[in-house]
Length: 343
Picture 1 (tube, helix red, strand yellow):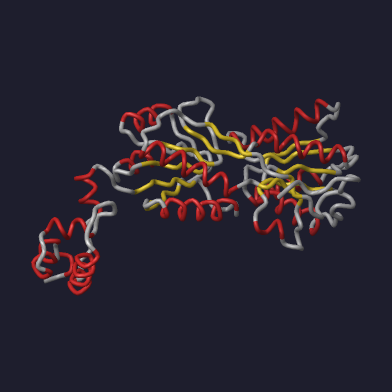
Picture 2 (cartoon, rainbow, N blue to C red):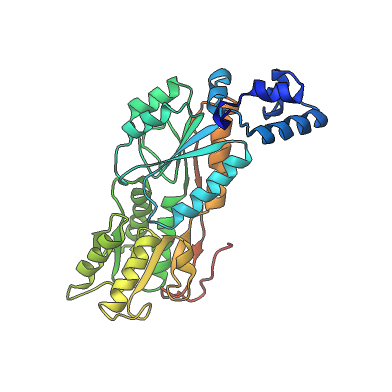
C-alpha cells in the first residue's frame, strides 16, 4: 500500500481506536488524552500517514492558509519584513502561500482570483494594489484583505504602513537644518502611496520653509532606473548638495553612482538620505542616513488586524500608520545639535 493511500481509518484500525479519535489527535483545538495522542502519532509515523489539510478545509470551511502577494523583492525591506510576517502568522497557526506579482505597478486582479481558488482564509498584499471590484468580491466571500506598506485611496481595505508623510517631513527638516541650498529628490514609482505620501510630507515642509526643490528625477524603485536618474541629475552643470531618495534600495544606487562615476565626496559635497533602514544601510561602506520603517510593529499590527477579521469577524477597515525614527549616519551632513531619535 502506498503512503498516499493511507487513510485515518488505517491508522485507527492499527491503533485500536476510532476514526474520530484519530481526527481529534490531528485537530489543533480538539481534545485527546496524552496516552491516545502518543499511540496514534506512533502508528501514524509507522504507516507514513499525514492528514489531508485541504480536504479537512472543505469540511470545516477553514484552510488556515493566508495568501501573501508580493510585488517585488529587490528592496531588502521586503524579504526581511515578509519573513517576520510569515513567522508571526505561523505562530498563530496559519500557513503562508506566497504569490509573486510580475511588476510593482501590475494590477493583480487575475492573480488574486487564482489565489481565492485556494480557499485562503485571508490575504496580505505587500506593496500591491487591487481593484475595488475584486475587493468587493473578497468581502462577499468573507476573505479579509490587509495591505502591508501600501494603501489605496478608497477606505474599503485595511492598510498598515509607516507614517510616510511624517517621515518625508523629518527628512526635509533635517536637510534644511543642515544648511543645504540645493535640495533634490529622486522619486520611486509615482503610483505607489508610499512614494506619494513621502514626497507630500517632504515637499510640504520645504514649502513651509520657503525652500524650492532644486531638481527631481524618478527611479521607480529599481536600481538601474535610479542609476540613470542619478546620472541625469548629476550630469548637469549645477548639481544638488542634498538628495532625498525614495527608499534605501534606490539610495544605495545613487551612492554608488555619484561616488564612483562622478567622484563626488559624500557627505562633503553631497548629502544622501534614504527611507527604510535596510541591513545594507548599516554597513560602514554605505552608512546611510535614513528613516527606519518600524517593520516589527507593522507586522504585529498586520497580523492582529488580519486575525481579528478572520476569527472575530471584525469587518471595519483599519488604517494604521506607525511613525519611524530618523537614523543619522555618515551619508549626510549632520546639523549642529542633531542626534538620533529614540530607536
